[in-house]
Length: 80
Image 1 (cartoon, helix red, strand yellow):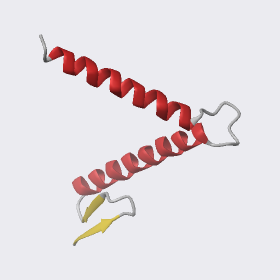
Image 2 (image 1 turned 60 degrees about the vertical axis):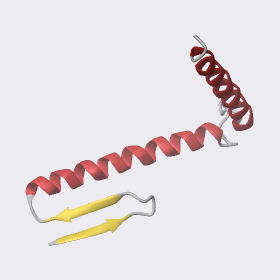
Image 3 (image 1 turned 180 degrees about the vertical axis):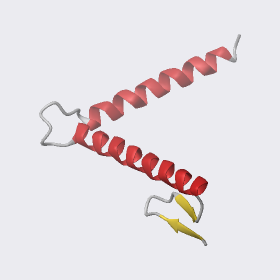
């Protein structure tokens, strides 16, 4: 038996009836769990109820500035 299940996050899992693919499925599901745990932690970092949360607008602006600075450095490397 083989079927494909597309999760709401767009990742594809392939199910098959043998031990090797069951192990692979377990690994895929564990990876999905880790992904969702990290996503939850990222949301908590910006959550208003988190007393130690970050300001997402300030972090965004800081990241935009860092991207600009790196792009400028890359541009200058091409001038050497």
